[in-house]
Length: 374
Image 1: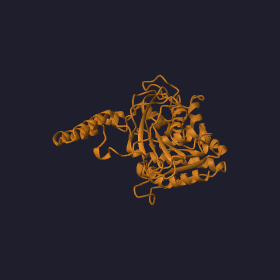
Image 2: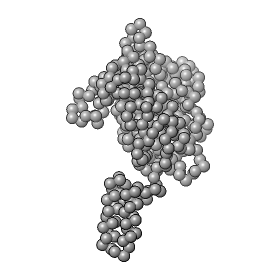
Image 3: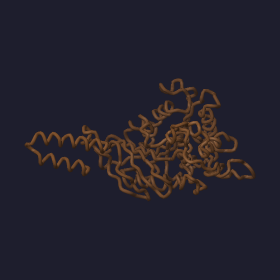
Image 4: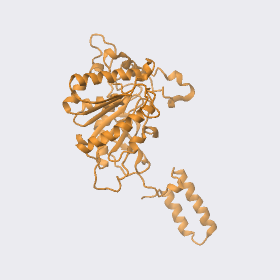
């Protein structure tokens, strides 16, 4: 392990002060202070560090990885998307002990207003996975896992699809011992990330063997206008005035206000002007997944039957996706847990982490089994 220069300097000073207890004691205190300043508690100074990663595929790392050897975050920059972006990586416990072993990868896409820097995105079922790597890349507070039509908004460059599919995936394959093929990759996500997972699998079916959407925004057709309205609400930042003094940390603040047309053009079905929304509608493209033989998993609750609860709309979007697969006579793993009764101990059927945690308890073993059967 390479020590930080500050730690090395204090350690050398300790060696020079052998036999001089008072000064040595002061040097020990200085070492502890140096470690704390570096964010490394003294008791963890010898703990295994994350594996070293090198820049690749247009991604440039900012600073060192933070976290443990099996749950850490790297920060990168890319010309494809403005700003700095965190990527959380979860490795199986035996990763370091089996240098000749390769692992399949699950790309897990977070929901709107979240961030891989938030440790809560690493759900227990993901960290407990025994035989796969999980990668949780930044998708922006409202990036919608898409290359925006308008790249000249106040948000700057927003080529999220390019970032994830052309940069993050090869970056991970270049740095970790992955099964770098379709059979060794899956993509899934929750809410906004559920849309992203289906969108990516439909755009690049050659990359993924499995796809999962948890309470996903799975339908963008003109017949499901409420989903379009949800996307527009994040773009126009309509909820920001409700944030008060909490500022950017507020879950309703999605960043600088941009046009409602920034991602997919106009959402209004006037003479086909909404064609980009229709082209991105996952329900309309379920046949792509069937033709490619991709395993499909969908989870949803019912939001208590309350139209003011987002899960109410996620349920109908998920049901329409299932109906489309059924019409194609293509099997899927579909779970509608209704009001959440019996679906874990913290699920009430709403659009929340309590339900998603249980979705993953069900899904992760299924995914690992699917990887093993490939």
